[in-house]
Each structure stands twice: as C-alpha cells, then as structure tokens.
Length: 267
Image (tube, rainbow, N blue to C red; front, side, top):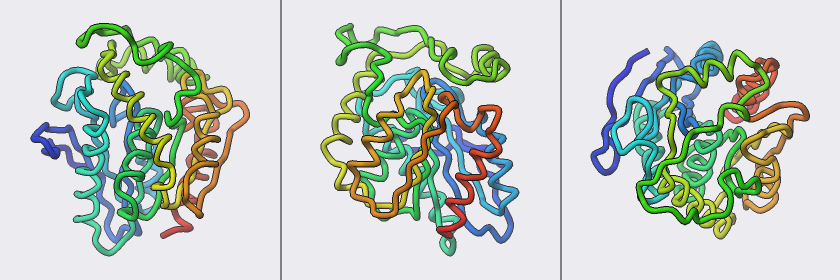
C-alpha cells in the first residue's frame, strides 16, 4: 500500500492511497461518503485485493487528509472531477485490465454523476446507499436558506449502521468531519437535480445496492435511479434489514461477496 497526495484538476491536493496487486485482473476505485474518509474502506479493500483487484482510494476535497475548505463545495462538478482525476490514474496504471468504481452514499452521488458526465470511461459501477434523488429529506427543504459559510453539525452517526461498534468508531474517528457546510449540501442538491434531468446519459453497467433500513438515504433513491437510467446491464438489490453502510453491517461478508462477484462477471 502506498500513500501520496494526488493533484486534482484545479490543483487541489487529494490524499490518495493505492493497493497494487501483481497480475491484477482489474482495478477498483472506491469513493467514500459525506464526512468520512478512504481508510474506512480497509476491510472492503482487503477483500478486493484477496481476489486480485488493485484498489485506488482517496479522501474527498475538504475531508480528512485532503486539501480544501472543510466539507465545502462551490460546485457539484468539483466532486465529480475529483473522481475523474483518480479514475484517470487507475486507467493509466491498468491499461490492460478493466477498471470499476464503487461509490457509497455521497460517494454514490459522485460515482453516478461521474458515470453520467463521463460515459464509457470505465467497465462498470457498484453503488451502495447512493444519494441520487434525495427522497429522504435529511436536511429538510432545499436549497437551505442560510448564509454561505454556515456549518451544521454532523449528526449522521445514528443512521450509519446497526452494529454499535461501527457507530462508536464513526463518532470517535478523528478523521470523520464533525460539521457540514450548507454550501456542500446546496451544491449536492443541485447535482442531484442535474442527475434527475439526465438519466439517459447513464449507459454503463451498474449494480445498485441499498439497505431498506437506511436511516440516511432512502432506498427509493436507488429504485428511481434504476428505473430511469439508460443502462441495459443494470441490477438492483434492496437488502431487507440493512442500514446505510451495507459494507459494514454484521452480514458485510455476504454483501461484499455479491459486489465482488458482480464485478468478476464483467472482467
């Protein structure tokens, strides 16, 4: 595993780590969610590496070890083009094998928007609890009518997982951001509106996964996305008892296995 800082499209330096496998059969870019960071995907990375996939991860701008105003976006395209910058590295370093992207929550938004903005660039996508329609109005009506630069407390912990140890680790993690700017939230909603207007541009293979007991993002987001996008190779699975972080739930091995198996069928 190597760690470095990756310069994104506008010069912002993003914390970047990669686990490169000899004779990899593919590469996977993991895109984390709001307020969290790449290292919360160590377990998923281990599972992918064990199956001969190289893994590329980064912290979103304004998150954890990356540069940028804290948990702040001036335009939703910033998060999309950061994903593109990381994908470009994965593509350059893996010219002979397919590249996939796994995105969770806000990272699921970023991944869906990347697929919509840059079709046919990678081999396929896996979405976990992806925020793509804002059916559960977690932050109330939008846009949030507060001055630019206003911050709200991060109260996401309770909806994260049914495993109390995961919730405690999240709450106590010094790299998990404790506040969220209204600028990020309002730009995220603008991005979701753009997604809703352009589902015909999403044409790549995708496996959409969501927990029915997700306390943060409604599974209706994923159901709507599945029904509206133009992709022909698309699958949807709603997990009956699972909460937001399906890759951290007690049955995570089963969930991760399904995701990796889906990817392997498209290598």
